[in-house]
Length: 301
Ligand SMILES: [Zn+2]
Image: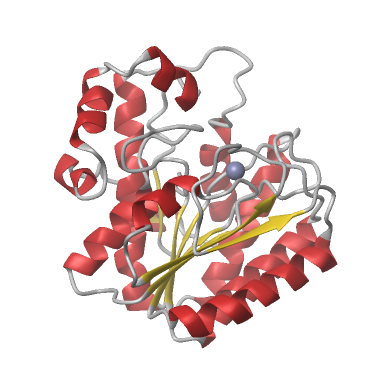
């Protein structure tokens, strides 16, 4: 399966920073080793154009990001030190989602090995999220006539505040976020449906909550297109999440999400979102299982 990656575009981080920059390269290698993607199916994500970003983000915010002029408060909220390399990588992360989003229209499903930066809103960039890749891709698909009614299914352990902020006034987009009730962000922007999951919740209760949420959201949104944020951070070994899903449970979650969305008639673009396991190989295992589930469902070109 063709996938998009931007792992070669790194940026400087202080020692012991929690951002798992190594996972992206490890994941690309793993997909090739597992036979999920051939080496020539790893596509380098192109940088998204600034005009595409301007379709959803505030121009003042974009100028401050481009020129390295974020305020101290913004810099703290972002949690990543500004550098030109960070901006380049951020643009490529969005470019990968945009490319995967167009591919999903052709093949039914497609995946970016990155993106899911859902804490970036119209005029804020926070929680490791510089730009909102899903919102930018969604706006581009709409302009190109490739998506009409859209469901954003956000299964990262953190609530999708930025996506909710950008999509708030759009009646054709339904935002659904399932997240740890006591996880970041502590100041939220309401989605169309927010499902707070209690700390310590394991596989069975989580899967039931997801099924119920989809039972509610699918008939109301009737999507022809969906974005699925397959966060690895509901994992029991995650340092930032408070849920307790196993790897098997996360694989079942992916299959449930992909099957329900495709059965509803939606093309599905899958993005990684977060994952901060103590052992980075656990995060890579979870992301690789998601990619394998996507590959099984992708139509051959
Ligand atoms: Zn997260």
